[in-house]
Amino acid sequence: MTMDHGAANFRSGALFVARATAVWLVSLLAWAAPYLPVDDSQVLERLPGGTATQLRELRAMKAASSEAPKDLARAIALATADIRASRVEGDPRFLGYAQAALAPWWKDPVAPTPVLLLRATILQSSHQFGPALTDLGRVLEREPRHPQALLTRATVLTVMGRYRDARSDCARLAGVVPDIYRIVCIAAIDSVTGNAGPAYETVRTTLRIDSAGRAWGETLLGEIAHRRGDPAAEAHFRAALAGERDIYVLGVYSDWLLDQGRAPEVVELVGRQTSVDALLLRLALAQAARKDAEAAVSTATLRARFEASLARRDTSHQRDHARFELALAGNPRQALALALDNWKVQREPADLRILAEAAAATGDAAALGIVKQWLAESGLEYPAVAALVGAKTPAK
Image (tube, rainbow, N blue to C red):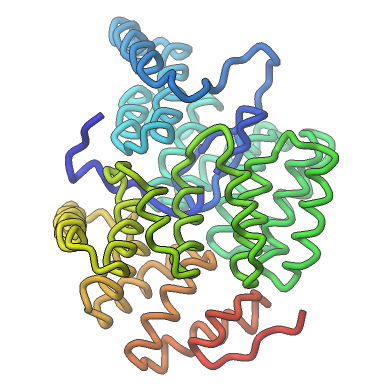
């Protein structure tokens, strides 16, 4: 599938899935809440190789929905399929198609619950976390123990750094979903609030007993290990990729390889999936590290895409843009400005890292102070970031 540059701004970060239980990205966040099936017969994912078939099915669904645009059941099915396609294809345009499918209810504050959930999913992708949380709150007012709303809201709150509220939603999952979801939900918070070691062991032990959430759990384990400098990260990322080449996992695994000085493997890992900016960025970084001639082409392509996004006032990819400006374009002050703006919206470890790198490159005392304060207050164990800003590393 070809993509224009304007449609290529697929967010990095957050988002992975537990394929064994048909978990799919419900957002384009660095963390993505798993989808919880309500019917054992529900078909939620197909094995690799079925993409063409899925797209044909999607076109048929669109045609049927266009004949009855106010048919709620058809609209929900189509929007759900479009969101899933955005992950499988790495094409954010499908999120626009999903929004179009929900057009009759898009601005309705009392829309049906399935619409509110899908709308929240789409809103997250463009950093509209406030409206997304509003929709999720409306769902939970109707159904206080709605598992998907709880899990999705916990995910968004975690990305925003609102850990106490996120932990509350994770805890409310007890008894309403398989326990592995609650465990990984809480471990994700523990891993960035001073309890990375216990979180790692809890998830690893749980996966030995219950493999249902393996891809989600293995990705979290890989990220914890990466931050702590543990070489076990590679095995976890490889396990998370088993069965399907998930875009989010490809990105975080590429970051680990880059940190290990293994740029040639990034080129091989990313392959031709350069329509996704997050992956093209990793490829360009690897090419630059290898001093490949192709690095100039990749860098120019990224520059054009980021400029087009700025023209559209699309700020949903500021973290990657900041990395680009710092590592490839040689503009540390522009990188710092982008990193600071990004930090106002989302506060994952990767967001803190680019902020620390840009702050260190410019010597900006205020930005260095922001990083130091977050490390001290959150308890995040990230020695590489602490070293950049001269902060003490929490004792393990």
